[in-house]
Length: 176
Image (tube, rainbow, N blue to C red; front, side, top):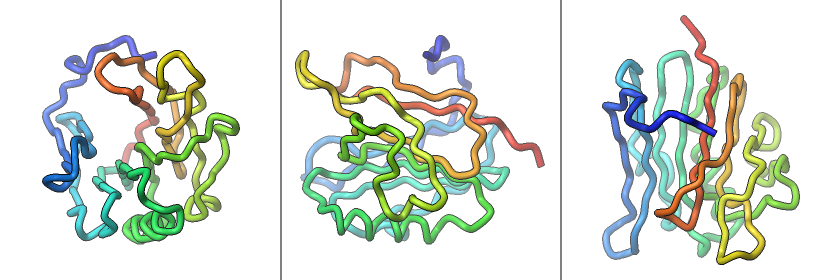
């Protein structure tokens, strides 16, 4: 578990992509430390399928980070197509992290790479359940997929303000 509070991370960049107006609460967001140089891709240029929100950022050191949300109403086939669109924006040779609420339960097999677009290159690194309804069985709906990243630590944080617990990954820096 992370023992530091978010305020100790020197966050100065907060990027977000809210759900379109009138479709309910939510969206996706990412915090970026103040000493990181980055370029943000426009979400409409990445994925155009309704019900899939994305935020795509290129950081120094040839690292792409994508945050996404998949509505439960989006079919598996449509989501596979969206993932394929997303990966077109990730150049070969770049390290990559794709994280978010995939609305696909991997609790019975956490290391499974369920999505065809990820099978050859990505590892799913979250193993704990992230979503609980009442005191019943949990589900692993929030995933982190990595490609060519040296993961130092990863896990799930407890929270009281959402029905999903947030996931995190700390990766080793690559110096240029």
